[in-house]
Image 1 (spheres, rainbow, N blue to C red):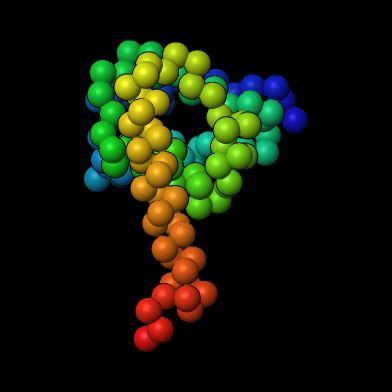
Image 2 (spheres, rainbow, N blue to C red; image 1 turned 60 degrees about the vertical axis):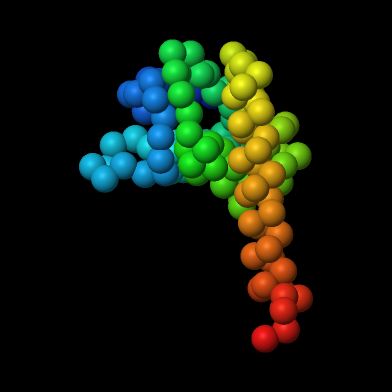
Amino acid sequence: MEDELFINIYQFIGEDMLVGRTTPDGSPSAESLRHYILENWDKYRKISISLESIVKITRTFYDEAFAKLLEDKTLEEFNEKIYFPDAKEAFVKEMNQAFKLRLKIIASKKERESGDGLGF
């Protein structure tokens, strides 16, 4: 296992405003970033994600790129593996909100699948 994968989101996506989940033309998107992270998860001890030159990130981008990782990994695994070395406080706040919502969605889905829902 290698030590660290460094991802500069601006270079990966090619934009300074990160919006949406996917792109209609197939260019790099939040979804492709999430897949790239998952493809490299077991290859690196640490994945550092730089937000240098990023002006804005929408809630849907946060959810698709990062919060949806919780569908495959636990929050503890995420916190042990993923680092945002230059994240500003506003980024962390928005990320936390996206994670809280995604965790509720995951819990609700598990509840429905286990039959503990409304009993229909």
